[in-house]
Amino acid sequence: MRAFLQVEDFFLPPPFRKIKMTSQTLFPTLQIPETLAAGPGPGNTDPRVLAAFANAGLADHMQADVLRGMIECKHMLRDVWGTVNVHTYGVAGTGWSGLDVMLNAVLPGDSVVAFANGTFSGIDALTIRMKSANREELRVNPMDPKPQSVTVILVPHGQSVGADVIEPALAEKKPKWAFMAHWETGSGRVNDIRAFSDACERHGVLGLVDAVSSLGIADFAIDDYPGVVGWASCPQKGVLCLPLTYAPVSFSDRYIAEIKASGCHSYVHHPILEARHWGVIDGAEVPAGSYHRTHSGYAIAAFHEALRITLQHGRAQKARDYAYHEQALRQAVTAMGCQVTSNMTSLVVLNLPGALAGREKELVQACRAAGFGIWPTLSEPVQVRIGILNQLSAAAITDIVSRFAKAMIAMGADLDLNAVTHGLRNYYQSAKAAN
Image: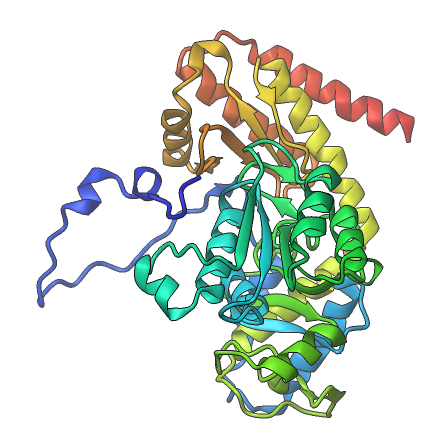
């Protein structure tokens, strides 16, 4: 598993790599066309979120409505997470920012067991190794340290992390911390959060979970998993806000007690200091936030509306809708001769038919050039990922299926588009009749 990703193959066509910059260079106004984001995330932002962002007034970051919006976001986040944790708030930035706050609890020399079964849990594990490494271990390999205190359990690409792996590792190592991704979008696999929480409780381990790909999609309440003390997610997947807004986190009293006892090597991404602007000081809620960082009224407005949309949809209903439409997509691509290997409900990860095997990157590049944003996997073996974030309608799934089928046909695939779309219509009509 590669720790660092080379994304230029997917995003920077050769002409753009040859631009020569000078002090006199003035580019024309940037125009970004509308595209269909049909990968693992981010998804296409809801128009209501974009409107909330654009219509927010120019305001000081300590303006009363901005602070009120942050307090309301905090309370809505508790409902979305399914928790009473007072330290539940958003971290300014992307999902990586939220993960960094959570993982800042890990200090040099801390014993950790981390489970990795894809690109992103692998990067999480690298982050943990960097945080747990002492100075000498960092000096030996600064970019990829191998601290003795960290055990990374590698589960092969395309397989889930289950009790058969979790229980023996924690029983043997009995670490201070354990880490796992809930849903791993690198390979499209759902990992066993119940087995993880139970094993952490059984062995006195503090569990940490990357819920970037499950929050706002799966129907779960984090208070049902007491072995997990820290959770981190992102704004742009299940919550469907703008990527650079607020990454949701939630920490139990046990986690916060550990931070108070051991400290944290950060000011900006300190789990307790971050909570101050969200009206949480010394574990108690206060009427308004205090100064910690400059927040954006635009971002707060967008995040606030995204949470409202999530709660209006309903956690359980949204989970059912994702499962329903993912099954339609799964059946359609299977009818095209693809083999689906994922078990998430927000995307399918697939192998192309034999005639197209080995041309996954070529297919992805052709789709992206046509405004259809699907993705390859970023670890071996290379597969194709097609996502349905915020595409929960028969019309949207039909559009995704048609675009993918046409791209395969353009590369020489022998398939009947009419038969595929007819099967899709039958799926939706049968489901509608059954209800």
